[in-house]
Image (cartoon, rainbow, N blue to C red; front, side, top):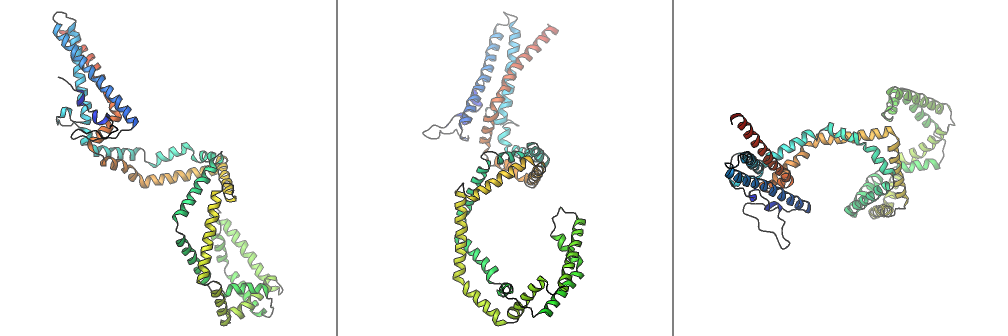
Length: 448
């Protein structure tokens, strides 16, 4: 049986396209663009195929010679048996290797051309394997824990060039954001915020708070007494409310019983404070409240003309043109300041930012508790991402393989592993020769 090396395809995979244009591809074959590394692999694959074929041809020649002269020279029977076994092993392994990538000699033998026919199933199996064995929370977290990302990042941030690199990338991000943002849109947002928070609320109460610091009037003691008494009564009757306010504003890590002790103390001190205000007619708080109540009650709460006048003044100061100009100046100032700061490595903003980055990096290296928290946060985040999106990540493999052409896929895989598979043919030739020799020797010894 004569075996042609071209039956194991090399031209589609290994022949690069000439500079003048693409080489014509054989009918039914896919054209694969090869990189420099792939060209080296293709050349190595051709050499291994030629070596395996040369061994098969060598075995055939040895078999022919030994078979022809074995009657004259009895020892050639052993050579013939070895060559015969080598040919059988070489042909069997050639068939096995070829069947992975194509139909041997073009014959549609069942269970051959495995990779082209089962390309999609192979991609799905590989995707499931990666998802089950690599994209698991335990594997990812264990790997991240062994890396100690926090300290390595801290060493880089606190080392030479780390903070500068972060500042450079941050500056590039800020410039990119300013490039994408539309100035008119940003100014419209600022204008809307000014109207909502500055123009819509009435100006009477703020003006009254300013007036109570200027005008001092002490003729409203009864009203002040009433307000102080009501405030003191409210404090006495709302012990639980004071505790709740203290607890709501307390850090989460503070124990509940500490919040209770602090709340009780605040309530006691607040009660003492209110009693002092009640008993001392010349208390500073009473004087401030008297002045505030006088102006606010008489002019801003009970005088509609004064309130209307305050609104008129507000409209004169901040009309539509003024608001637009304010929004434009605000955005232009912020934008210019930030761009100048990020473009100048010696600006105060850049220097402070770099200093903060270095300080944070130093803390990551030296503070075991902080480094542990950062590593835990990274591990938890990575675990969440893997658990949530593992199927989508692994699905990239099966989706990519599904889009490949069947023949092109076979050629790509053969290019990557074909050289190693040719060793199977070589080993089959050698093992077959040894097995044939051993079988013939044992049979000859037993039966003569």
